[in-house]
Length: 147
Image 1 (cartoon, rainbow, N blue to C red):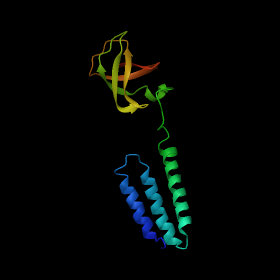
Image 2: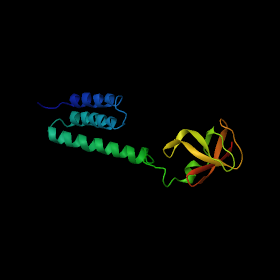
Image 3: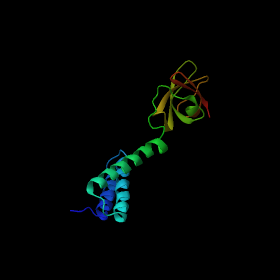
Image 4: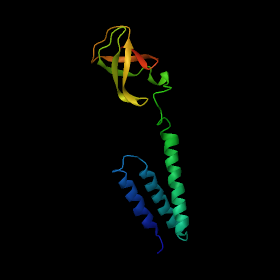
């Protein structure tokens, strides 16, 4: 049986739709690779199945690598080695009271370096529920003030 261009198109669309059920955001690139192969096979129908599968794998892996290299370069950050410049100036909401010499806790709308809740310190007493801004990173604590 010869693989036709529409076989690749159906497989590509099926993989893209399967991405809705798999939260890894990887299947979409293999689906797009299938759609690319549909175009390639429509233009050059004499390619054998081994060549088609090899080209599909190369295109799919290249799209996946491109996604993680260009569009998601900061995906693999950890708490260790946190860069202060990424956090300073961020605004969050205090979830636990903070006082001089006592720790509090601040929650951010978007995760900062992998977490949306961070322990914090302040030079003044601030009650929970107030908006705060990050002034500095001191070890594993964020130094904050009212925003």
